[in-house]
Length: 332
Ligand SMILES: [Zn+2]
Ligand SMILES: [Zn+2]
Image 1: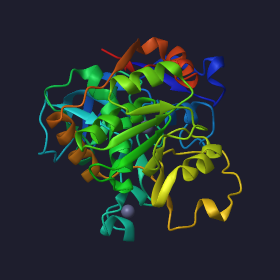
Image 2: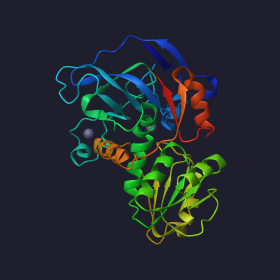
Image 3: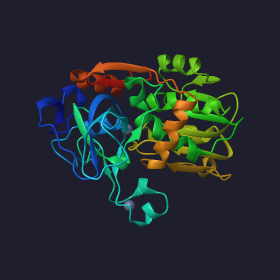
Image 4: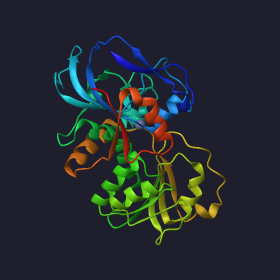
């Protein structure tokens, strides 16, 4: 099968992904094989390619926002059948036994394995996944539009839920890439007022099209204080800016898997019961809830499509924030 492999982490400008011909994998017990149709780009792909995250497998096929069709079933799989369209996200598997798995926090499982990181992912014609960790895709999404739901969407959903924003409240979004452009749609659906902070003028235009009541730069002060904010940009220097515009008891959620250093904070920025928290991965329940909701609203992912062989170029565009909405690779 055609696949793009990463052998050594390097700056994405050096085109670190290389086209290779790999054997078509066979699904083991409890797993399915997916013929990949589309795979979304994620900042985590960029962090893997450039070595911000330590390598767990080498060479590796990256990509964890897979949409495709099941074409082979491993022994014992009864939940899916040949021809089912499914999505495969970042969470590949968990141990199901640890203290976190037992209390509904399988996203924090110390033995969790991740798609396109611990196991090969979706920048290839075929991928394997445990049947319990892939999900039906609502019929109203074409393959390419469904792909960003699998990480940008699911992680955005978990961030939004953990931020606990109520109807009528003011929510700030810092950075306006793939995840934020879906979260604004969730937030508008729940009648929140959304304020978007980004230095990218095209992203501000898209934010206003999607219903932002105000857009500006991270240093700007919005016309009203915010009840909550989600920081999607991996820039720790934005944390004090975000805290400054929160009301008393405001909540700040950090959605990135990595972040540059957070500068020293004056305690007055945090006082009055403000809360800062991070979000790590997501659970199967997040995936199921979010995909159902995405189909009901319905969300409208804005996508920019690249061919699989253009993956290096596509990741370069992602790094420069030059993608409107979400980047997606068309695989077959
Ligand atoms: Zn991701
Ligand atoms: Zn566990």
